[in-house]
Image 1 (spheres, helix red, strand yellow):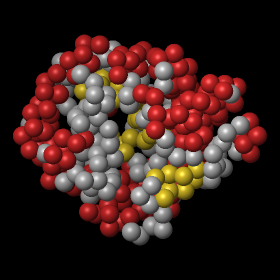
Image 2 (cartoon, helix red, strand yellow):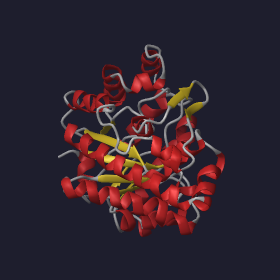
Image 3 (tube, one colour):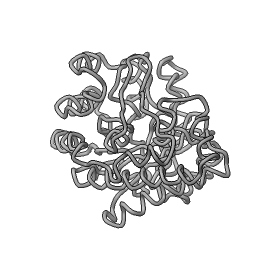
Image 4 (cartoon, one colour):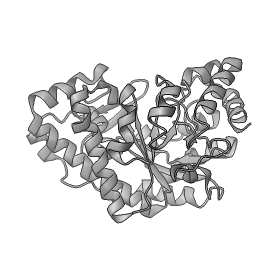
Length: 339
């Protein structure tokens, strides 16, 4: 059986399997060369031959235990009819959705035909993976995606979306519901295309006050997972709530996740007691330690593996790998994890 699926089923392995967030990305010279062939980032995501190649590049180079489909969380608003673009060096730009009138101009259901290239990519990758490599799909959590849809870009402390949730809770709830429905349809089609498991990215959990985290983050994620499992009972999920802090221990019980992704700020001794006792854990080396490399990276890697050695653990970073990372440091990390 695939090692990551074993961990998601609750098994403790002698050495943890490993993949890293954004493993297909700008730190790889082969990715940078491939990226020049697309006119923009969305074009890259929607060209299966390129997305397949990008997904497979880190598998060929490193033999990670999982491949994650090359795409972006903002394909959902794009497939709902919101204008989405990516500015080089600046990130995503969206035409803001700020009220019920603007929401009414979007599609009532996600356009899965618009996302057909993603499903073609999944099928293409599936046929080219080693038999022990898990294929991961993903989506953004409704709170995270809604934050982009409202602000039109990434913003400090998510002020526009938080203000909108306070000022117009009816609109905000409708937007969350639209994204919940879209995510269910999208994930179901990903499983049909061949993914083995999915990660839900709640990239901005840390921006939510405690009294809003359940309503706008945990509850929508729980409903997404339950609705997918109603049709795919074997569907496995990793939920990554960046910035959740001491509330990481609520993620599995609140969402039904098979594994909880940990960011680099979480104390692993605390997480081993309070999180790993409920589910598998994934994480959580600081990405900047992989930029630094060397013996310090080795020591932290050993500490994390030791802390989680008595339960199910997938080794990963505490967020995505950064472009400044040396591929040689990643090679050293893999050798350290695998012993």
